[in-house]
Image (cartoon, rainbow, N blue to C red):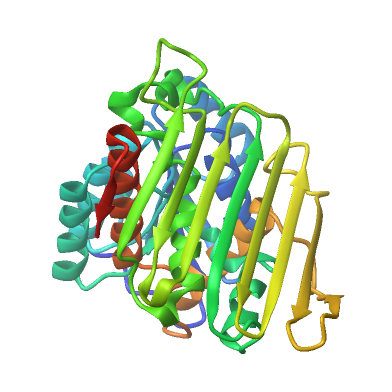
Length: 351
């Protein structure tokens, strides 16, 4: 069932599927975004349904996502559930004529990503992937500076994360390989997307080499330490590295090129803190000088999520393109799976 036609001046109506830790942040972001309306929530467990009803007392709550996606007064289905559920829910929503905002990873397999893409193309609806770091005043500003020629032609990119272990997730799904897929699909997928975005002027990556290990012998394929080297045309390369055997949440991006360099850093006690420490520095190869760049406001997931909601609502109204579409989602999944294969086999995977 297609959404009831929306008046151009009326809010874009979001239906939220999932109300766990991150789903509750999605709900808050939708409610705080001008031009967006949280019209309905679907949550699986009684606990999540009760939490949704308490947090959003004026929003109908359902136990069945099918009821939500069939509702005529919803424009966008925002899907924030465990990875193994993405493909079925996203495909059903698109087939019902809804636009979709799908949390990363798009899915755990290329075949499921392809199935979602086919549904988006046949329905002619928008499919946005939750790469909210592209919306960041920090990480997005890095991209703007690269595009403006701040580093010349990029030659080297480092994206590194030093953080505490992952949360278990509802029912422990994030530590279940059958449901999570693998951990490169959790946060490193953001970094593969950023690397391709930052170095987009060079062309698509050509090969990936990776190493990984786990400090828990009971889960050797869910790795705490992961590093990958992604080759790009012309000799440029990106290093993507993550450790989950550390503390707090500290992310770094460093870019060097023929004309200069960029260094961005973000630190918080938690990944979703509203009071992070961060900076962005730019340097000139010609003068050797460096200086701080004003990012124009705070950065972090909780801020970027609302910016993402604003972007999706504007795209539904036809005012701007999506920040990241299904093609970007598929590419990132392909790179993560290739990197996992490279780590397991200790070989270089040609792309």
